Structure formats: structure tokens, C-alpha cells
Image (cartoon, rainbow, N blue to C red; front, side, top):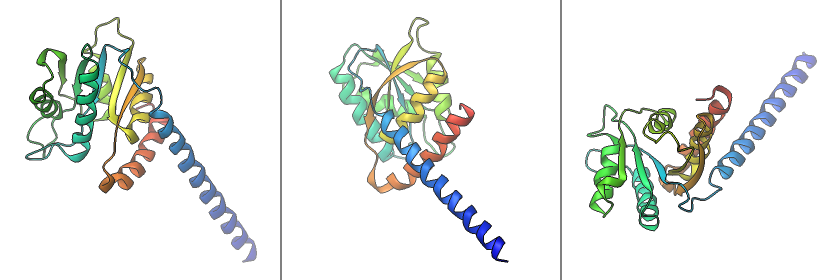
Length: 193
């Protein structure tokens, strides 16, 4: 009986230490994701969508739009690929909701390309890449700060170099989103998608 108890204690200890290590590792990756801040060098930016509510963008999407609007005003030569499909509970595609907001706020329609078929971050990057001219090898990714590491890793897996514009994460959902993102980030590093 004592032997099984020791084995159980060792197993719990190993699991706990592994969990702490993975938590710290994914945190480091997430911190690194916001580095290499965009400066307008890239001619194209991919803006990743988020939930569209019945009458307005979700807070996450609104923060991404606010960051996109600032970046677009500061870099008037950059074209924006607005990426996001329409979920079953969304009144329109995420890309269309972003287009409406940006054009209402002074961004010219000809600067905006819409990608409306994606249903995941991987598809956001993959389908947006298809809209880029063949010679483009580097883009700016605009998304929530916690989401940048995974988005940039996926872009790298698809042979795109990136810099970043980080939108803030709504405090009300930060703990849930960041915890979920850590798991998704591990999956991306293991599976590639």
C-alpha cells in the first residue's frame, strides 16, 4: 500500500510540474507573439475576425477594429484583408461587419479585400493568403494580443513572414480566452493547424 501511495504522489508531482511548465511555455510564446510591432513596411495586413452579435461587433471584434482603424490611418498605403466567415448565429460575415465599420470611419473601400469563407484561425490565414499577390511573402497580422502568437505561427507554417498589431483583450473575457488560447497554441505547435 505504501508503494502505491509513493507512486501516486510522484505521478501527481510530475503532472503538476508538467502543467506549470506548459503554462509558462505558452505564456512565453504569447508574449513573443506581440513582438516585432508593425511599422507599415508590409503592404498588406490580415485582420482576423471575431464574433458578430445581432446588432454590433463583439467587444473582441470592436477592439480589433479600433486597432485596425488606427493602423490604417497611420499607414494609408496598406491594404487590409478582412478575414472571417459567418457563423450560424451571426447576422453577417465577420469580414462584412469589419468592412462596414471601417468604411463608415473613413477607410476607402478600395483598400479592403474580404475573405468570407473561413471558420477558424488556420482558415483565416490560408484563405487570406490566396488573396495576396504571388510576390507577397510578408504581411501584418492584426488581432487580439493573446491571439497573435498562434496566428503568426500558422502564418509561418504557410510560409508567410509577419509583424504584428496587437488589439487589447476585453478584461471581462480575458481569463477564459487566454486559457483557451494556451491549449489551442499547444495544438498548433504539435499538429501545425
